[in-house]
Image 1: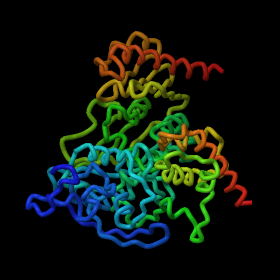
Image 2: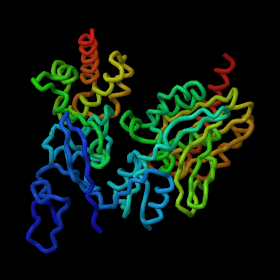
Image 3: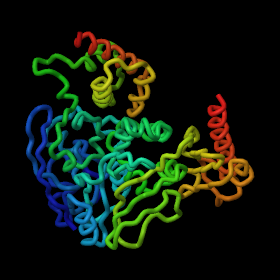
Image 4: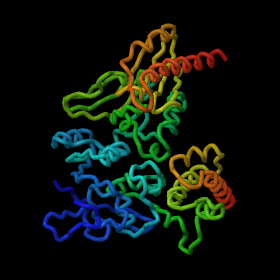
Length: 291
Length: 163
């Protein structure tokens, strides 16, 4: 199809862009200009139904807030079916489990930043999560969407991995849990992320620096002399290191694979800044503890 | 393959709307093309700039990146819906006029809607809070200072109305 003003609507090859055949299709009114391919919509109300809907199609995906998925569809990705899980109430809510806090996968970023349980039990995490996205994204986007999008520039897994968090999945063959810092978080069967669980450790402190985003972001947790470092943006997937804080300076540049090398930042720069930011964060935590 | 039609029922600017929409149809297209609410502007088409912002159940939503079916059951307010039936402008709208907080004006509906969501939650935001909140939207003309000042003025108007 040529430009809008040359469309021949009498042609047998003409296909309306949307459901109209008026000025919008001719381009005179600002219809959204990157059309999304048609898809079937399913709206399950339970996790089991959602997994069933996924299994019904060879090319289906999950949508919750839609922040990431719609952007991907705008960029040309397409699916035969979208499974809208926003109506599954069991996936919402934040619960204090005593030794940990459970966050439902459909919990929005805004819910996280305003939740009183998190303010009391995991204030460092809440403060760090508040820096993700802008207010429009935070009020619509979900923690589950952030994690499952698996975008190199997203920091959800960086933070959760640094805190020893785990991701709970409901799969067609049962339920399982995976550390957020694991290399592979999926299974070769339909599975739905249902919740995230974060341990509450006495005396643990978390610090986060995304000032160099999208080149590199670093999260650091210090607990009883053990540092857990998460690194985002610099690799295709977040990288993690855990060890005695005294060994961090030597270990950090060496343990990770080669960083991304692009016009945003060279691999050498990223490699160097990982160590710099991690050291700054640990130092800040230690100085605050001393004061 | 072809998509599907979905039936949605929502309230737009206080009026119940019941429509069949294609699953791939965006909320902004329904608002602009079917309901003739052209105050909502399409710009980046990627939910980045915020020009297409509308209030959806009191939250700012990028209508260019919201499927129309996601608005089923929602209470939606566009820039047109902020103005009272007698034509009285919302305090945020009035403050933008008073402060000349626009140049080309294309981003203004989204800016006003976004500011409205801030003042609904915090009628007394400090400048840092305003800057942080309004950072969700992009203006390519004003340099932002007049927008920030307009939101400060709107906040004072809202507080005065409440007293």
